[in-house]
Length: 278
Image (cartoon, rainbow, N blue to C red; front, side, top):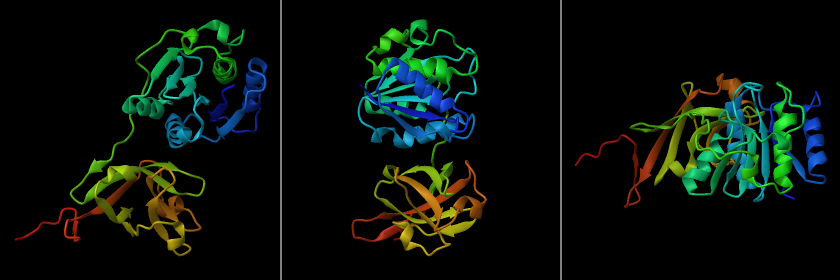
């Protein structure tokens, strides 16, 4: 059977994750279940979407992601099941699946989204406060057991999408912003490596502090700030052996200025915004 991967904001203290796994095993005995994260900040749909977007392509084709960050539980918001290329996603229609839907659309991958409202693929009694157990876990388990996507409900083409912050072009380079802070206090921004075409980063500025751009953490001394490409190819700021977030008093949304240089045919480099005088 296709593996199921769970992402929630439930934590692991109260049994919510465990009972979802119990429901899954009751419907699809023996299906492999993997925990991606259960430490999304409570009700933070944006952070859940960012984390999913960073990691989902590292899972095998056919993986079913059951995702629950659901401040609108019990309301009229839809439950959806989606196929994005070779992956499947189940969760609330609140923008949580935005990166994967846009990924599939941008790459021309298969993209099908069902309004998962068919009662026979839910638990017999659905509470108004725990759709992770009563709707999303059963839908994911039935998918793993071979139920086709169309069986869960009518296909839709108007999913809720989050408005993700965009990188701005500046005369010197780029204006980015922090979109994620991990447990080490590293600051991941929305500037992706592939956005730099024929350019290299000359310096990074956050909170008025100039931060050197390096290739590895080890190039900085303990206690020093560095900027580098992280494992998802996002520009990130770190404090070697410490917390950049605490040191810079940074949070999600903090502005990051990036200056770049462009290589010229003769091997020289030109600063962005620099004029050539003949």
